[in-house]
Image 1 (tube, rainbow, N blue to C red):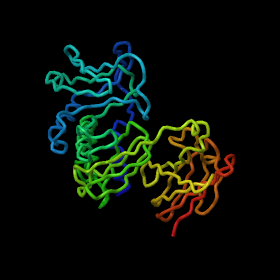
Image 2: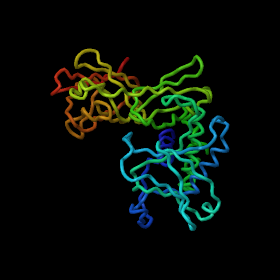
Image 3: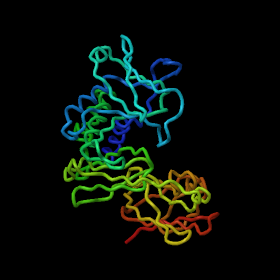
Image 4: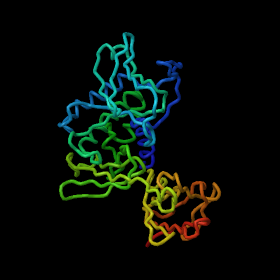
Length: 360
């Protein structure tokens, strides 16, 4: 049952964060010279406004709900014509001003709701992504308040539910055993809801009074315990951004921090490989029973990407596996869940190897 719940939550999450790319069955349209522009149901966005008002107590210092447009994958906003956002229904289009930082508010217009209007962007589908952003004023850029994120999740899920329809809603509610996806879990384990970071991350931690704990991060996202009641709404998540690469690191990628990335514990995960001496790196991972894949390399696998020499290559517990640059995914089948040590030996940079061993 847990596996089914995890799969269904992944589907729900894809809808909620806009990660799923659905087949476009609507006729091609053109907006100010842009064919097939990005658009979203205005009624769905209004559902998000309703959720913000209903759960405003989670972030009482925030006067209004704002949204943010950003480029995908942490890239810079693409240059080009000014960004125009409009509510388009049966009447005259209603402009929605977008600030220089990509943020905007959406007005509530009853006539547009009645028309089943669309929120239309003068950019092609997939170029930019938009999502609500709940931020209590006065916090540093690298600090997120947990109550803000709980409210942000409520807004995201409300928009997703309106877009996906009743039957899909009922199916997901039934499998997750709750209509509140933000607090769903598997037995006693609560789901860690991911949120995006506009900058690459090294690590992050949550701080609540004297209590603190590390939280998992990937390249441009971090997991949050929004479903865990023991963390207060005033808990802070502190994001530690990755430093810019030095000229030396750009010239010699092996001087950069190395990571192992893959699908461990049924989530995308990135773990730092600690450098013990020149060319030797290690990390420890908790692996669930089942099949996993992983790769080794620098941040975002850009400068260095190490993988298998062939597509069907398996990592064997205790065995040394040769790696190749720009290789295939490395696969491992875990018979016994537990903690595993990964050792990268790159003393010979032309013939690196990886060893995976289960710890006692």
